Length: 379
Ligand code: FBP
Image 1 (tube, rainbow, N blue to C red):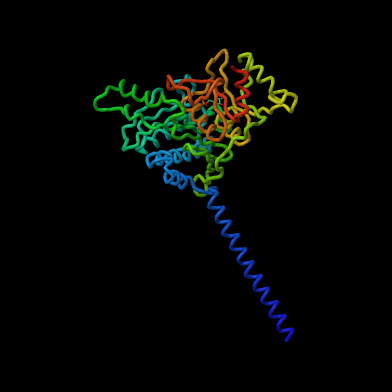
Image 2: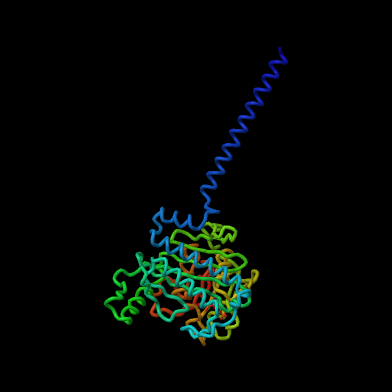
């Protein structure tokens, strides 16, 4: 009897234990599901874009423009990867409006971006680093979004297969300023296009870049945090790998072309010298220098590791080298959305009102404390 009741008791408790374990396991699974539901890592880009629309961060027209840009980036990623194999390295034989020798891939990437944006039917005006003037899109079915872009940044690195990238910014079109092809002269249409694109960065409704490197990574913000998507070539889709990126508040990495040091202003030279003795914590370990020579590559590393990237003005180029509209403003939008900063040395780049489409500005971006420290030498 005793035995029987003990066995029964043991069986009962182990059954109880089993069911408790089962319950515990299912609670854990439920928790895991909840966690995975909370974390968006693994979300395909196209799904994320639809989710932004459901959150009213963007409208359907804007969603279509973003999807189109992701397609253009996939095409450029494949072109860049095959450049050496397909004879697409070297010069195209022309110069762009900046007087720079165009690389073959500069021209091809520009065509890819222009065609994809035009055929999306949702852009009204597009402006590119490789186009002299902004172009009014005739195939617009709606949306009138304005897209400014650098189709292939860091072109000096292409032939060496070092990181390059595409950069873009999107503005809402100026409804008072829609070009009318029927009644307006080409000059009037062009003037309206320039007015549409020459908007301060704080008017941006979204911005992003795509880095072509050991991985192809698309980084974007629609004004509600910064997200990163890595191209999974097996499925041909960008998959979320970086969620709500936050730039570390400070970081001991600087990224400047110090070859221009002698042409810099005394304040900037003093700043650069201070980094070699620990910067704001004098006597601490010196900053490390990292410079790929491609804004997208240097910016992406700065987003993840912290530190500062800078392209100052100097005695030869008082406004530096980088273009406000399609390099500095989009990157400043992303930096600020990630808790960092984008400055011209004295104030926010996003506040600057562009006077010309290809206007250059001195540019400093990265960790908020590092940019503030630099600015303290520039005022
Ligand atoms: P483009 O390649 O689009 O003209 O961009 C300018 C750029 O290549 C940046 O990507 C880079 O940070 C910088 O110029 C490098 O300039 P430098 O060779 O003078 O250091």
